Image 1: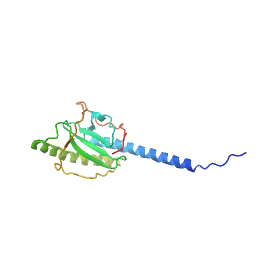
Image 2: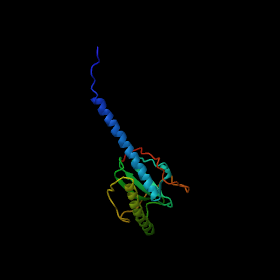
Image 3: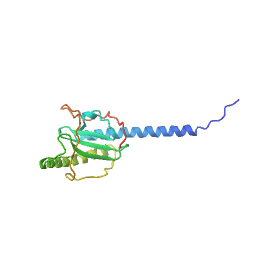
Image 4: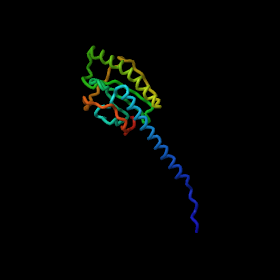
Length: 169
């Protein structure tokens, strides 16, 4: 008795979905590596809380190697197509003096230049991103984000072996 012919359409469809999901995952990994490399080019490294560059809930905190008071919160969507950044103060409290607001605005202006370098670095790696809004320096108060762990004095430049573990919320 000969076996009945079996339709492979469902199996082919499931295989195609699995291949497509795998390719999307590889592309996310490539884009995340490009992000870490581009950040390193402009002098930023992940804070110790995310020492390996793991992204949780779409947020990554990075700090310029010569900076102690400020960090940058990098928010990304699941596919790393949308990039939003905000300078945050990691020391002090939310009450600001005129002198603190001036320093915040100066540091935001510096970040704007670094942000342009970051986007150029991403573009050079074949990653185009959208930035949904640009807020001029000094227009809004800099948020204070008390991070429990900060970069040590012996900071390392962002390492590309980082991985993405969560979706943006």
